[in-house]
Length: 381
Image (tube, rainbow, N blue to C red; front, side):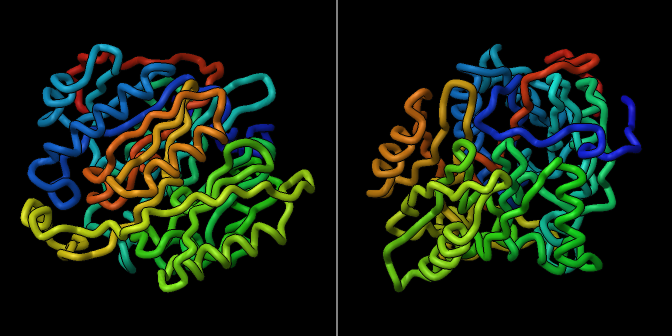
């Protein structure tokens, strides 16, 4: 597929909001033994449930490696397009492409550099070469023109767009030393403006406590429409998240979006009881040399903000916590036009992320060609 040498902003392209119409969603079938305990048995059930919920209103493409593609086909219905493709793990939000559109509805993709959330500094595994190739291979396979941003380390979970020129990020993530250490904050901001067509970047100080991605924004704050956000929150002043979310709230209240509007902010409680790794779960992991190793009792970055907005629904993580229902009620009020899908997501958070982290939306629009892959293709990409 054609590699573009210009910049999206110059060409009139920008990143739409997740709440805008999708053609579909890309996911990756889980298998990595250091992320998904006991052969990803329970994780695959959760992935399948999420994929089927999304497929109620948009196309779903599930990428899978050769040794697990039959597992994907066995657990998924024919509504899901299964495509053979190599990867190191299942975080499609971060390894998949970011899509941009222009005023005519034409869609193009961006291929960022991926370095396992920190590379040699604090990356979570030692070899991420296959993951770094996922975005480019997907764009080639599905016929999208590609902007090559391989000089710049960025993950899809570290950005959130209002579709009108405003991008949310966190300082803790984008200024971390393992990503783009030679760039200043201003230079990083210019990259976001050039590639995402942004007019304004809102830098929140923090993400969710113990988020091993250096605190991705998609776990703490998300646009639900222009000028309106959901912010992860706790009233427990003894919880480390309290001061972090308070700092984010103060920043949002001081800021305006690209159009000069102040934000409507909805506080969404985090689980009341911290979600931690259980000893019996720890026994199911198999860690590779150089991979981040989990410990029993380790607090995980559980947040209800890590939801996915599909064309017809909102797929919301649940943790068996008393705040589960509170999250569903608030999101139902925020998205009255969409169906709320509660999904028990403990079997995903044990991998380090959640529903938004394993999904990447593909905007509705025109491309030169789409879907070269047969769902039964045998060629490894």
